[in-house]
Length: 68
Image (cartoon, rainbow, N blue to C red; front, side):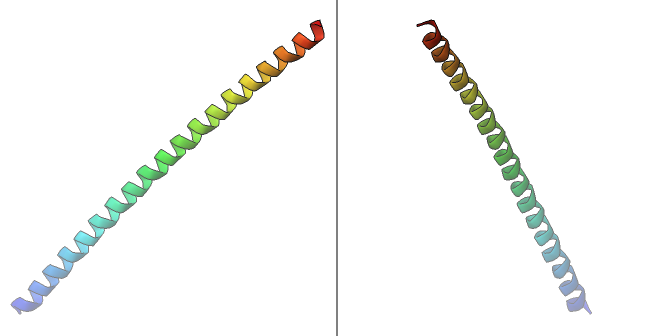
């Protein structure tokens, strides 16, 4: 009888450990996902700034040509 209870206890502990490991993995995945999303947003912002800079430069060149 004791060995059956012991086996059940060990199975429960193993299941709990597995559950904790999965939760830790999912939390880490979520953290990485968030980090990737932040990097993606930052890259989009950088691209927008670069587009604006290039447009401004193009306008200046156009105005300089017009004045000649």
